[in-house]
Length: 140
Image 1 (cartoon, rainbow, N blue to C red):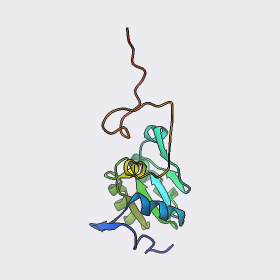
Image 2 (cartoon, one colour):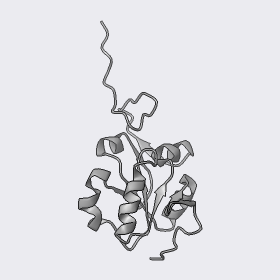
Image 3 (cartoon, rainbow, N blue to C red):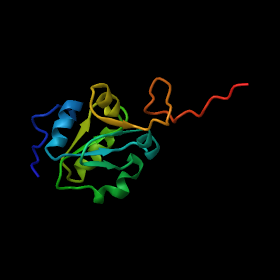
Image 4 (cartoon, one colour):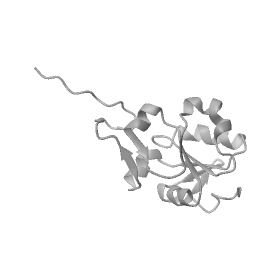
């Protein structure tokens, strides 16, 4: 694996490489893996539709870090790109070639990149990526 895989992509802040959805999609098409750090209930509502996709909730990253493909470049994502920076630092310290998906799945979907949604789930609120689906509203 080339350590400079992400060098010409995105931008760097405080030693962390951040990729736009477009850069991440291009990197995935060249062999990078997307690691989704969201909780499994969030993934069930909406997921990335890409090859090389791994679900590893942030809460279980430490115990699953050895199962991630160390020989491949990784792009980590969460709902909005904020909590994933913590994972980038852990993975960099463990020797992974890793970048952060700026804006998470929210920007990914907003920019028109493929997602799969569960049509049975209804979401509402300002940030539907973070809310659990609402049940049917009871009326009298």
